[in-house]
Length: 291
Ligand SMILES: NC(=O)c1ccc[n+]([C@@H]2O[C@H](COP(=O)([O-])OP(=O)(O)OC[C@H]3O[C@@H](n4cnc5c(N)ncnc54)[C@H](OP(=O)(O)O)[C@@H]3O)[C@@H](O)[C@H]2O)c1
Image 1: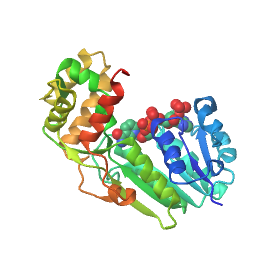
Image 2: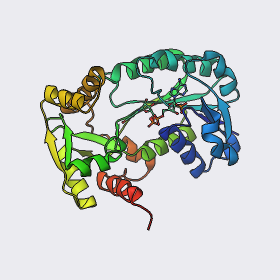
Image 3: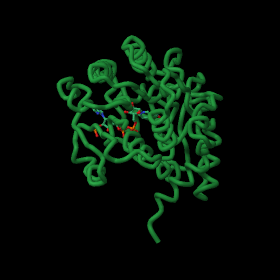
């Protein structure tokens, strides 16, 4: 019997990874959902998944969370600036608990990327490499949901605002990344690996055209110079630091940091990754009032 654990199982990706493990045949009793707040995943406990408390910032919480775990999915944390220390806590606890394989959700080309998000992922990968653990690094590119989650905003304003300079971004649904993570956990290949994961690439003109086609509401892409975009975001109420950070992410796209032709994701899934059109259509359908 192999015991699989998923951290951040209360978040979007972690929850989908638990679902993907179950869908691919793992028994609920062999799946451990590690969360800060067990009540958030009471539905998983009801289905027989083992729920344990664990906080990346609280090393004392981690030995009990990881006891008996053979293979662990460490979903990268969401508290930017604290993540290297947090992830190092989990890696150390996993090593001490005898975890045989640690799967980590990193960022596309983390070790060389100019993305403002890359340094924490690169540093975590270094911690993993030094740990002696067998590691599978899933270098996830952008989520489609970063955009499809804003459909109402785009159709309401008629515009996709950005400062990507026509740059392309390779993306995939959270569900596809989660399924790839489940495959990496379930695989009998016990070697350390790094995958560059993404689906199809698109630019913001294609994004706007796809939204127009799917929703029937005309949406255009409006590309702004970086500073103007930052000022526009401040006008929407973002504080200076957040506006600069968000504009920095688009500058990173403009440089090609989130563009890849890797087919690692389709390879892990054993099928083509979800397309932009499919992702937009699913988000549009989900947002429609029930008939
Ligand atoms: N590729 C992309 O486009 C993209 C976009 C956004 C984020 N990400 C990265 O991917 C990760 C997963 O994405 P997501 O959409 O699932 O994010 P999410 O829905 O915001 O979930 C974040 C999860 O991290 C957990 N968490 C945060 N701090 C923690 C800590 N100290 N100890 C234990 N758990 C902690 C949260 O737990 P609580 O429920 O207790 O808050 C939550 O379960 C993010 O955390 C981030 O690193 C990637």
